[in-house]
Length: 333
Ligand code: NAD
Image 1: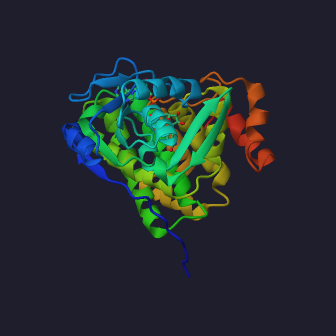
Image 2: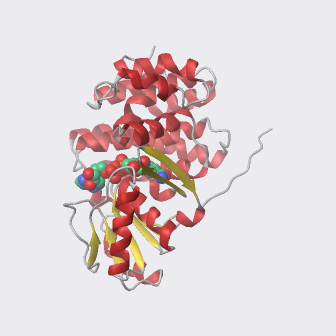
């Protein structure tokens, strides 16, 4: 007999091509008159949003948040608009935590942070997380048009980052039929879309499929507890400064190989969604075919880091051989 609890987060989503034009209405809807745009340097501005902070950095360093907080005060901002990837959304959430201002997220990667109540921040090389439903953006505007400029390489790793949320949702202790169906749909869409994006990063149909997949995978991430893959990536990002989506891409097939004996049903469902006989090697082969990075060594991690990284999960001894394989970049057995 199936039994589960399901707690969904209230979220408002506007999805389509050209939906950024809806931003002024959404700002008004949250009662804003002086929005502040949070983005990375060099990103184009947004019509109707005068004030801007473009010092966003990966892994939400608290020093950056403090600088942004000064701009919030100087500009007397009454609403935050985070435009960009998970790093922009992260800064938005960090400012929500400190000011209580409403946040509108305009995601331009497939990271999925906009669908979660989680904020990860780094200070002095340590990444801490907090979870609070108040951090969920008041509205999320997915504009497929904005993802067209995401370079093919980053699109692939970001898409595989999204796939990791969906995969770990399927073997989560909180798995439930609603999340399972989101996860499987996300995996299928991403697996179909990424090869097309790698070939033509301007393919609007493939971009649409990938962004829908990222949204669904983001719901998985925000709704059920993730497993060892996310824990390891969290430590690699927060303590070793490893790049987020690339680290997810390299590690995913190896953690799946580690999980396969204890989660055979989840692996069969992932394999079916991917259209391959075996899930871990299927994900590895997809990454290779799309030209994504395959080794932690290649991403700059020193071999001596593997032991402390392994120690961050419950079964350090069990995970270690799989981390070694990820470091070398060998195909999972
Ligand atoms: P990112 O936001 O750092 O973006 C990577 C780079 O891509 C940046 O230079 C950015 O300017 C550029 N970029 C983004 N969108 C673009 C576009 N459409 N066109 C051209 N360039 C574009 O990377 P990310 O992988 O999206 O996010 C990673 C961060 O998000 C990490 O800090 C991670 O911890 C966090 N994250 C948090 C959660 C959560 O739930 N709290 C979930 C996922 C990710």
